[in-house]
Length: 220
Image 1: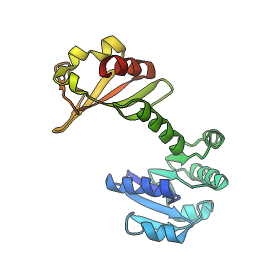
Image 2: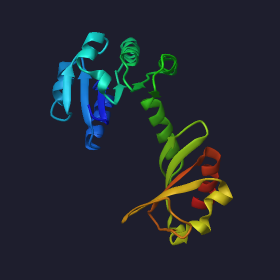
Image 3: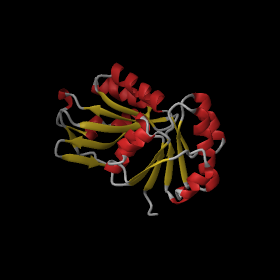
């Protein structure tokens, strides 16, 4: 198998959405689910699909799962199957195992068995939506770690034409503008002389406090 091939186990709302997006991004995706209807639905979208029980080690081995670059366990509401599948994937030797957690406790168990990354789609989406609701200029919010966050902030009219040197987020607030999304394209790693215009989107990285200060004092 070439690098960049993914196996998505569990083709419910989250798993199918993730699998479709990976295909759009140009990767080959194997979809696995016990439900024949779900597999049929995804058969024309994904590279390969198979009806299978992912808690059966022999089945996983027969699918060559060990050769995949990454396996995502997106099993919907069966915590036992999710944990069993994750254990088998680690034992078989899949390079990277990412697992959806249904609760904080489920997530702790997955971390203890050595899953490479645990994701909480519902919790994380709730956090993002809450931030968007309380901050009208905030378009997106992603927590990178306990300390650092990356956000997208829309540029209001009154800041149109200002340079990053004038805004000076790093010196004044400690956060950094890592990209500016303009109508004509994205500026990655902008310099101090780059300007922002109304309806541009600034991508900013920093701590929550730094970004909050910058947003309240500069963006308004």
